[in-house]
Length: 77
Image (cartoon, rainbow, N blue to C red; front, side, top):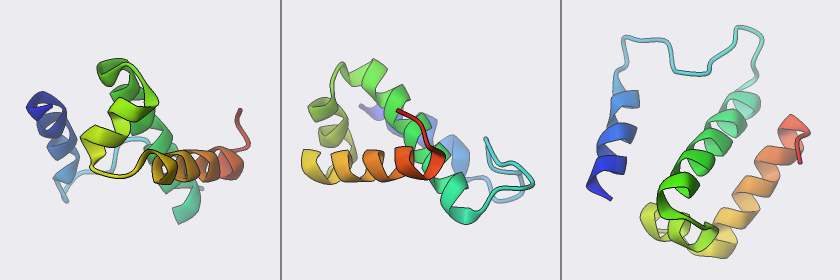
């Protein structure tokens, strides 16, 4: 778990352009892409949806809602 948190902290460098940012992104698109990227990364580490929710410290239903919203914004399945 601490390795995952250290990896996330790499994104906290304000002088750099955020990973995955596109010039034509809206804030919602950027956040949706970031949410899905983090979810997919953590799912590979944790093995399943419940494990991802546990790492993030949120209820699995909350995580499900956020992932579904991100997918709707980006129109992905």
